[in-house]
Image (tube, rainbow, N blue to C red; front, side, top):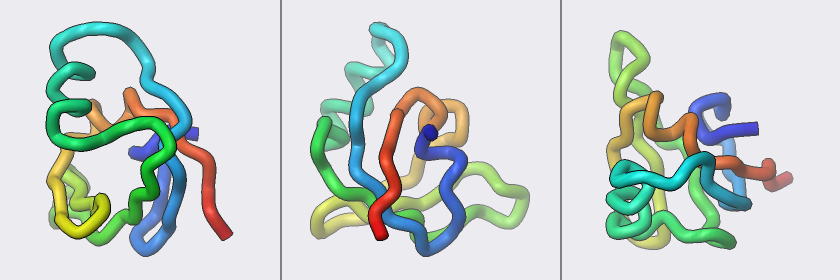
Length: 75
């Protein structure tokens, strides 16, 4: 499952990243790291971008960027 497939309010743990390029480097620089817990806060009215909560801050990602992050759902 990837981050873009989560619904609003769902929480997950980051497992891995898909690919190896500058977009993934930027995601890691923004603080997305393996093992971190994320929560989907909201989606823009047209569905893109999405807002996630990561540690103590919120981050907006395009769905195409979120699709590069593999996650596992938390109960």
